[in-house]
Length: 85
Image 1 (spheres, rainbow, N blue to C red):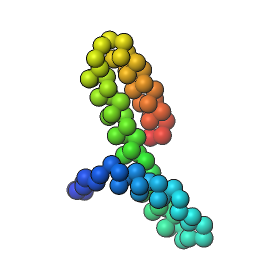
Image 2: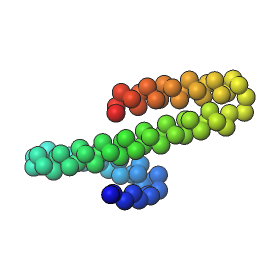
Image 3: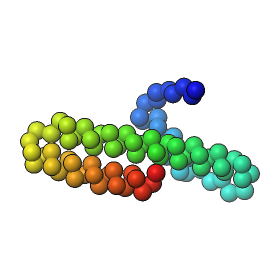
């Protein structure tokens, strides 16, 4: 059983940014595979958090028009999220 840890959102964003700027040309393919796994896991987590935030906008909308707009944005994000999963 894997344990999960909590990290600040800012640290997640900084880590993703760092991974995006690393140049791994010439590294061993095993390292590249590990890099890809970590990078993709972090991107998936960020998308999941963004989707959760979009859903909360539906729940806490002040009126029906705002709720409708939030729902449309949520569904669009969910559709995009499903493409990357």
